[in-house]
Length: 309
Image (cartoon, rainbow, N blue to C red; front, side, top):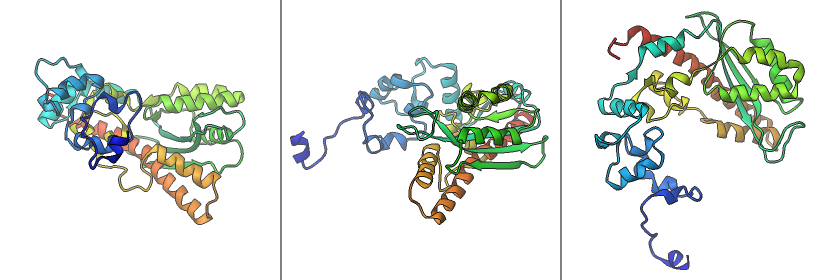
């Protein structure tokens, strides 16, 4: 260690499994810059995992240069073909089947949560994901204007009870509830119901109405080269609609959680608190607006895509 510290230059070490094992290295953003800036990197191939390293050691750096005899899963084959051709893969039948599961009015729902090592609320456990924000866009019918509702906890009262009360007020007895990676929203609703068993029946009723918008992208029924192997909404939304989070002050959930804790439990001027809450509304609001945009885009793909796709 002393020899390394005293050296005039840092040692040149090729990236490898040691970058993440036994612990993630903090220098990955620096050492992996070549990889992250490579278009269609082999490491962005979906579910490639450790199998990327033998290819990388052979000089294979992009999905387009994968040897023809390398065994690929169906999803990986879809990604490779789309990135080689520059054209999206669209399974029209699967898209139609997914869209047929949606029932109006559509309720596009998203939660933001925070967690702490020492629970800050009675009845919660260490590192429990506590919802502090919801965004809900409602479309009464196809083509109707969206109605937006937003709630952010102010740090007073029972957050889970207030959240359920808001949802009861906003979500009617009919229609699908659409979430992206819906297992997260379902888990939070179940936890809220456990804390308030008197609302358990209502929660059980809406759980059966939740539709996961991630499904057609996780299955690679729809894949655009710009997704770079990812089915996350941060990749899917710009690929399908051109909209992104890049111009927002808050751009991802971890940042939203940190900012919420800072302004809610820290000593922050009121002007700063109000400013951050506006940014939180913008971020979470784009999550639900984006889901509506994705559903609209899927409908357009189904209507206009060539039958060969």
